[in-house]
Amino acid sequence: MAKDDAFERAIHEAAEMILSAEYVVALTGAGVSVESGIRPFRGPGGLWTERGEPPMDGYTRFMEDPKGYWERRLDPERRRELGRSMHEAQPNSGHRALSELEEMGVLKSLITQNIDNLHIAAGSINVHEIHGNTHKLRCMNCNTRYPVEGFEVSELPPRCPSCGGVVKGDTVMFGEPIPVPTLNMCLAEAERSDCMLVIGTSAMVFPAAALPLNVKRSGGVLLEFNPRESELSGVCDVTVRAPSGESLPILVTRLKERLG
Image 1: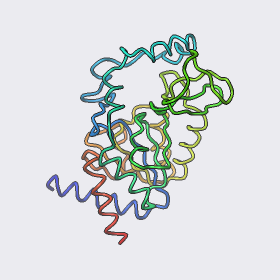
Image 2: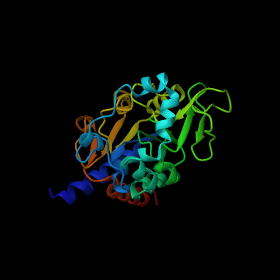
Image 3: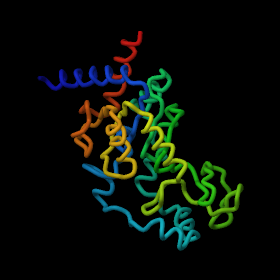
């Protein structure tokens, strides 16, 4: 079977399974933003593959010296390649396709491991950011989230206007627990799902990587959209081997054709 035929067959099978499902949820990883110019962390071309993973005790360091964390965060010389590209990036056709699936009523919610805000920028509404958002800050006491822009940081570390707790960047650091409200919501969405789209993720980071397995154990189906094999490929019911910016818009077209 030719590659184009295999692609079309996989898209057709994915569309059929989506139409047969009652509650479709998406889980996205770094791969969905590669086409927006944001490098993945792992795998070929990955930032951590090239430079090594950041310290595993980042959260411990923050807790020991939150003022020092903020001094480093505010240092203009610390803007690295990932930070620059993330703040300059725009949603790609894959992000927009997921937003369209939600607007169509097909996709009920979206869980993302990405911190780049691109799903929200593309128009997705029911988004659960399991690793946080680089455009936001979070109180370590009450979990209230604030936009970075306009937040008062004259005192270091800054304090939460609601409860007075210490505020840090919203992105989850190594060693930092996922905020309980966010984790519970993601677990609940996976529990409700009988069909999960697993898009552009290496499926190596837990607890996010456990969510598709929870769906599978409950009798649901997994549809993978990834140009490369992942840790989940062996248990997925359908695998579409193409970048999400290419495959997801075609999936939307096929679903529209079926739904009339």
